[in-house]
Length: 174
Image (tube, rainbow, N blue to C red):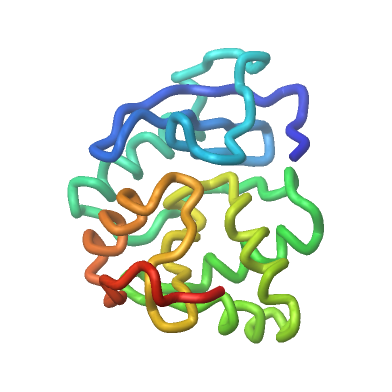
């Protein structure tokens, strides 16, 4: 993933663990839980907790965790991904709170029905956890599969949104 040189960061606490947020002149470009797979190294980015997009993201995430917000209204910059990844990430934005999709359904939605594994890989590399709701993607049989932030977090996010999923985490296939 490539981020512009003007990327800035802030850190926030959440009920599911500390997070790093990043933004640039185009919008919010990252939201990762500490230790999340595929998290970029933010050490070269200036700490800027007063940046307007970072402040807005922190406020909206706090509202989400308090049960006061279900949909995010933030300028997003998805340009760190490949064109294919960006297509998948935009498709994630169409999954409503409380709803879920399988990786296969997501592949169908972007007119790439045979690209299920590539879609799953793109979902896993989503740089905007929660905001671009990759946690709403389940295995073929509705089971919890893969989440870069860890399955306990995925389970907690889906429960918070009232989504239905299988509790047998071993049965799902991408």
